[in-house]
Length: 299
Ligand SMILES: NC(=O)c1ccc[n+]([C@@H]2O[C@H](COP(=O)([O-])OP(=O)(O)OC[C@H]3O[C@@H](n4cnc5c(N)ncnc54)[C@H](O)[C@@H]3O)[C@@H](O)[C@H]2O)c1
Image (cartoon, rainbow, N blue to C red):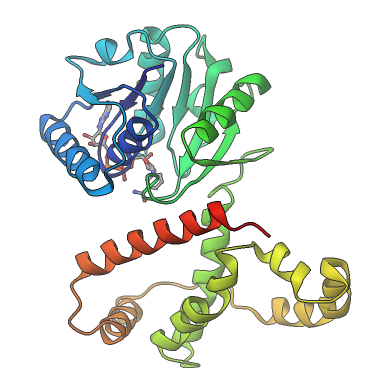
């Protein structure tokens, strides 16, 4: 089964490796020749790095050529409703009728992207975490006109290539992951702004505290293991404390230049002299190791 990756910037090129690693031939299209060259070079370097082989990736000569005979299209073009609507109209026109059209959109509602399209039933959001070849979760949801069977087939396909599909019932801005991230980041910024602690201390309670358990279980799963009687007992016992803290949490915070500088200074102090590229490589390598351990050591 071959797939098309349409738009091969940061996210598209990572999707290329997700599919080739699973043995699928990938056809790539991007209107920018520079993006195409960079993506192929990045992909080849990644194949060398992970030594996991798989299918090949080729650049197609046009968008219709990229879509010829594919069963899955992973759209990863610019994040604007107009751009996605125009692109999905092209995808729907040229992709085989049985192909699923998936968008990597971080913020947009598929109901709006696919509005009025003859093939709206086959359009889904498959929102990855950056970079998807390292972080497996993908948020999956349809629009108003998407077939439930298409959402199910999308989840099956993503699982078959090693991702973890996370199915949503309906659209909310930011989906699940970015909303929860924003809730936490909002509080982190507010604590820094109020001078409660330094940036490194705020990072440390996640890095060396909550985050270690969250890599294994979500907030509900952790609660379930934090009381002898499980999640029910935990939330019954601590419900009032959570209510008090939730009432005390900060509202929206404006990221002023001064605040951004304090965040920048804080992370510089956390990793003095370590090049950012090395931090990024270490982060991805460790995430891959944790993911591999989780695959072999179950509760
Ligand atoms: N970067 C992230 O952290 C992240 C995470 C999850 C999802 N996303 C989503 O993935 C999508 C791509 O984001 P990105 O960070 O890779 O952006 P990017 O700017 O790196 O890449 C976008 C690519 O789309 C290409 N493009 C422009 N017009 C096009 C067209 N008509 N057809 C096909 N390709 C076209 C551009 O040349 C560029 O290479 C966006 O929808 C974004 O919201 C991004």
